[in-house]
Length: 51
Image (cartoon, rainbow, N blue to C red; front, top):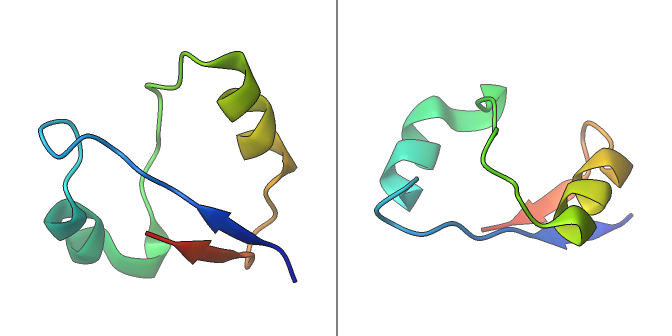
């Protein structure tokens, strides 16, 4: 199983906000880096994520 390490700036999306939405997740539309965007496309539902 692949694991993905994700980060965000606390003033944009905090860990508390992420914990509040829980496993259902939320749309993420602020990716400007092409390499990061391509990696998001490679992710599959149910893959392990480290925050």
